[in-house]
Length: 239
Image 1 (tube, rainbow, N blue to C red):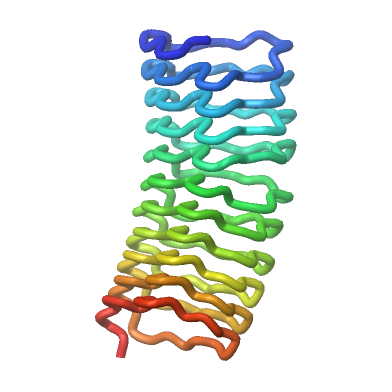
Image 2: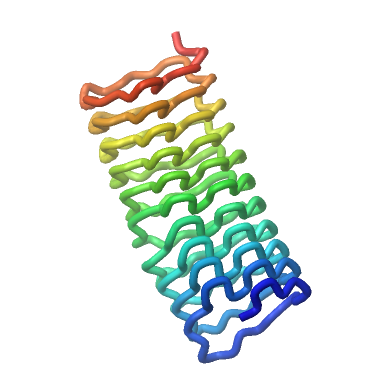
C-alpha cells in the first residue's frame, strides 16, 4: 500500500480496517507514528519492516495475529506491549529493533518464536511468561545488553543460538522441565559465570556453552544422556 514511501512521517488508519497487508509500510524510513484502529485483527509479514524512525508502536487489544518480521528493523522503537488477544506471533517480529528496551508479552503465549528479539541490543532484562514452553532458535541472539532473564518452569526446549552473544548475561538457571538445549545456545556469553542445570535435561547440543569465558565450574545432572561436541570449548576459566 505505502511500500517505500520514504517521506511519509505519520498516518492514521481509519476505523473498520481489520488487516494490514504484507510489506504495507516497508521501508517507510521517515514514518514516526501510526494510529492503528481497534478494529484491526491481523498485521501481516514485514508490514512495518525497516520503518527506522517509528518510535510509537501501540498494538490494540483485538489483534490476534502478528506475522514474521512485522516490526523488524524499527530501529528507534523503545517499548512495546503485545495485547493478550494475540494468539499467533511469528518469528523475527522485533528483530533488529536496537533501541527496544521494554517489552511486555501476555500470559498465555506458548513460545518465544525464533529470532523474535535478534539483535535487540538495548534489551537489558526480560520476563518470559510462565505459559511459554519453548524458546526458538536465535530468539535472543545478539542481545548484547541482556543481563538478566529467567527461564520459567514449563519450558521444555531451548533452541539453537537462542542466547548466542548475550555478552553480559551473568547467570542462568535451566529448570528441570527443559529436556533439550540446542547447539550454541549460550555461545559467546562472555559474562556467564553461574550456570545451574537442573536434573531433567537430557540433551545439550554442540557448542552450547562455547566461549563462556567467565564460567569457572559446572555440574551436569545425571539426567544428561547426550552431550554434544565442543559443549564447553574455549571456557578458559573452567577448572
